Image 1 (cartoon, rainbow, N blue to C red):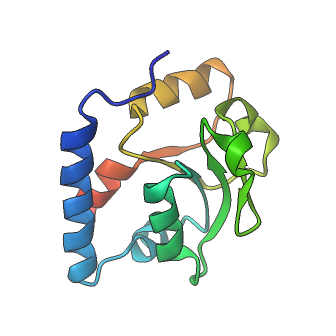
Image 2 (cartoon, rainbow, N blue to C red):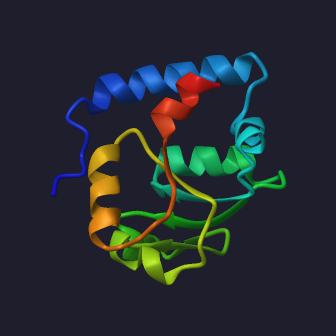
Length: 132
């Protein structure tokens, strides 16, 4: 199943632009997660975008439990937080929500999780950025 977003460049640019506009307006993911009662999260993307999100929340009361990335083996961990393959998601400590990067097809991630019987709540990074 294809996980790459076919509109990667357009979606990525638009989402990052909105994220920076939000940050310039003093809105962060920390407040967004608080609004929904999320205290623990997983991040689907251990690349640049996932690491930037981690940097935004790491000094707060939001705990990142794991990163998911197709290159997990080459990364291992980030600040002691495990980076796992998609197939390992049911093996890690559960989080309140998995935030899915805009470079990944959100619907495909949900289908795969459902097929594997994983009931982890997911959230589209792109949708979240445009919601707050």
